Image (cartoon, rainbow, N blue to C red; front, side):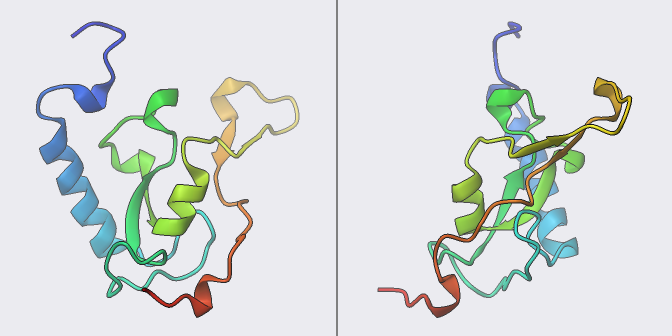
Length: 118
């Protein structure tokens, strides 16, 4: 595999991602982006339906199927975040080793609570 090839395009990636996705859906209940509960009974394309988000986007070097790089998210939160790294926080006298990357600071631009599917 060439160094420029993304891991999600490597053979065998999809089964590993699907296994990790099932674990995330079975064990997490809170959106990792907005911090609100996710109703897993809602089906896609409802904006509040459950999706699995890559914390570090794949095009920024995130691993495609590592559980440490996956989190439960609302579909609308995941779409809003897209491939952004929203916030990088450094502790005082920090190095890259103790950098914290978080995506829990996105504003909710729409009133999804009152959303009605067409």
